[in-house]
Length: 338
Image (tube, rainbow, N blue to C red; front, side, top):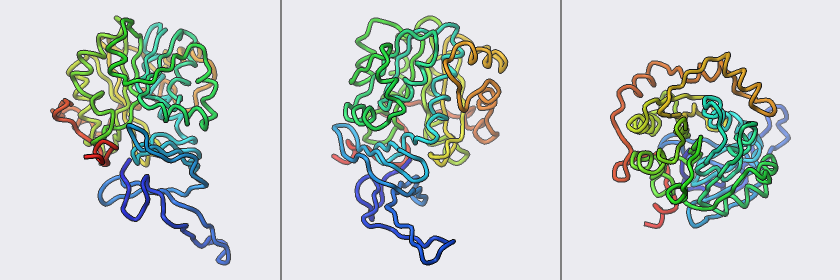
C-alpha cells in the first residue's frame, strides 16, 4: 500500500511512542506505537500497534508481522499491507473460490506466492481437491507465517498441500504436470520487488497458460481497484490477460484494512457460464464449512464495475512487459540496493 516516510524507521515504525488523550477521560492517556504507510505522495495510512511480532529483511523483501489494535495480526511486505487477521477472509475468498466454483471439477491447484497459507487454506476447503502446490519465493515469510498465523496451521499440516520454496516462474517452467487452477497470490508489483515479472504477457503466454488443463482457470490478485487507484495496475493487468485468454472477468471488493477497493482477474479459454443460484448450490455441495463473505449474488455483483472503472478497463491499451511494467507507489529491496 505504500513506502515508509523519513521520520519513521524502516517498515514505517514510529521512532517514539505517541500518546493521545482519550476523549472520554481527559486524565487518561492511551499510549501506543503507530505504523505508517504512504499510499501516495500526499496520502498516508496509519494504525496503532500492540507489538511487533517480527521485523527484518530477507534476500528478497522487507518483512514485518505486526499485532495491531484494530486489524489483529497484519503481514507487511516491502512496506505494504498484504493481509490482516480480521478481514483477510474477504481477499482470500474472492481470490480462491470463484475459479474453483466456476470449474466443473477442480482437483489440482498451483498457488504462486501465498506464503502466509491463507490461499491454500481456502482451496483445501473444496471436497474435490486432491493436491495444492503452494510456491513462495521467500522461506522467511513462510517460516514466520507458519509460526505466528495460527489460523492457517491446519492448512500447513494438510497432506494435500505440497509446499515449495522457489521462484514460481521457474517452478512452473520445470514441472511437466498441468493444473486445473493456477492462482496468483503475489505481492503487488513494486519497482525493485520480486513479483512484477509474474504479471507480464510473456509469462502468462509462454509459461503459465501451457500449464493449465483444458478447462483450466487462472486467477490473480490485481491490485487497488478504487475509483482513484484502478489505473495504477488493475486496468493494465486486466488488459494484459485479455491478450492471452479468450474469456477474462474482472471483479472487485472493498477490503477495510487495505483502505480501498481491491481487484482480481479471472481468465480461461472456456466461457464462465454460471448464475448466482448455481454458485450457491456449488458452495453448499462442494465446500466444507461456511464462507463468511462470498455467495452467488455477491460474486456476480462484484463483476459489475462503476462507469469510471468500466470505461478504463474498456479503453486500457497498456500491456505488461519486462521492459514496460507499471508499478504501484513504493519500492522493493532490489530498488534500494541500486
